[in-house]
Amino acid sequence: MTSGEIGEQYRALLTAAVDGPGARSVPGAVAGFTSAAGPLSAAAAGVRSIAGDAPMTPDTVLALYSASKPLTGTAVLQCVEDGLLDLDAPAADYLPEIGEIGVLDGFGADGAPRVRAVRNPITTRMLLLHTAGFAYPFFSADYHRLVDDGHYPDIVTARRAALNTPLLFEPGSRWNYGSNMDWAGLIVEAVRGARLGEVLAERVFSPLGMTSTGFVLTESMERRRASVHLRRPDGSLKATGIVMPQDAEVQMGGQGLYSTVPDYLRFLRMWLRDGAGDGGRVLRAETVAWAARNGLRDGQGVSMLHGVDPVVTHDAEFFPGQSKSWAYTFMVNDEPAPTGRSAGSLGWAGLANLYFWIDRSADLAGMWATQVLPFADPVSLGFAKDFESAVYRSR
Image (cartoon, rainbow, N blue to C red; front, side):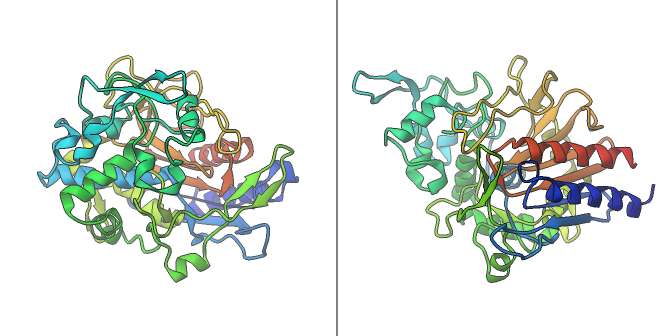
């Protein structure tokens, strides 16, 4: 089929996503795909906020949340290429304060956390692979308790103290999804001597032509920003005033970026092109080759994310019943996926129901994006899978 015919198919899916009954719809969505040669194909439907009538457009600015992580991971890989960073050296060699983090060993009678010293130091490789032991308050009952009891600020505050939470286990012993990439971003800052946003703008966004991506919203980006919405228990939606901190103490490499689907597709296409962007090389081809593969040890596979805060997330798992692992820094589906995604492909998501994939075997990458909480919203996730499947069927 031609790209135009593919476009008609996904435009129909976008329309279905926003025109369904309230409990089975999203306010607005953007979807797109690309190959190494291009072009970038993207379309949108719906509105940026149910509180207004501004249309959702392909250049609508979206909160990426965890879709920020691979961008930060790319900056880490550049530091390795430049000889500034050894992934297997103690991370405290570059950022001494991470060496002060201990392992949670339960709670005392007074409710205070008991913390013991680590036996193995955290490395930057562990941060990239999510094996350091960090978690998130919405995916860990212990972390939720630490925040609720006032021992640490919530991660969404982007405060430095929010990152000082103890580890759930000895570093390197297993996989667990958490605030690792926020720490990795601080390591980039330490070795580059600049804020993470400045590093990304110069070394990632500029060579890729990502003109609407950053931690801080420009006037143009703010005018095009979609509202984050909350789906209530009855399925109805309300617009929230959630905006990532614009004067953040920490530019959170794991959650803090804003972007558009076309901009993000340029980043995904770089991985299809073995590290090359339209305006210059971002990563060496040999770096992409090893970074795009599973880095976990046997027995350290990716597991279900169990939600402990229903306002923020449902339980979440991609391709249940299939083996998943982790690369630098994406999920890897170890088996062919029901959507058509090849085994060994890369992918992940953002908290407000943004989903993307990179299939280097099939020369195909794509993204489906909304701005709806909680994560793993059945409506949003269902349409994301339908979109991905439609793109593969149309090739």
